[in-house]
Image (cartoon, rainbow, N blue to C red):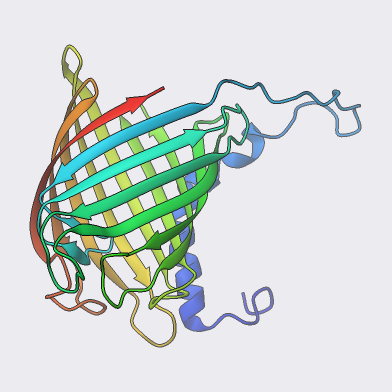
Length: 273
């Protein structure tokens, strides 16, 4: 490792090994399944254009009793409304996707500058690719702005997600690289798992669990920040959910900033075209 990665510190090496452990079950099968068959010197087929479909769009609206980051940091400890809109150019290969997501607080809390308002607005552009072995890769660039939060500066992210379905079970991991803001150069790894099953006609029950590990820039401690479990019941375009968050370590956030042990209830509506 010292020869191949001479600039790595012991802390960097631990991070690298940890990331490999999280994502290796998804990276390992990517090779052979996606290589072209036949001899290497065989003439290649003439290029063909990716199949195109009409533009695809989606809209959703959620209401919830509170909102906090994946890391467990509490943004709003009161009711919120969360609209979202997305559009894709319809290509079958590496479609270009644009998305908007907002968190509108209905009650004023410090450090909000207004009685009500958007405490977070996210804009992103990205793509995805489904490999033949079932692994799906998502990647995007995102900016998060906090217009109603006094003293908060915006944050830019690079996000990547790998997931694979095994029957009713979905397993995967997300990575966030923070490029700006107060936590610039931090990296968050979020392994997750989900199981879902039909209950009766058009009704599906699901359980989602995830944990967030934060790699801090500099000498600050790396730590697990929060574990979140969400139970969801869906009927057609409607869903109800209960989310339970538990603080795992206070090395990064204080108890006041952190979700600690908190339950959020919410409902959502989604529509795609």
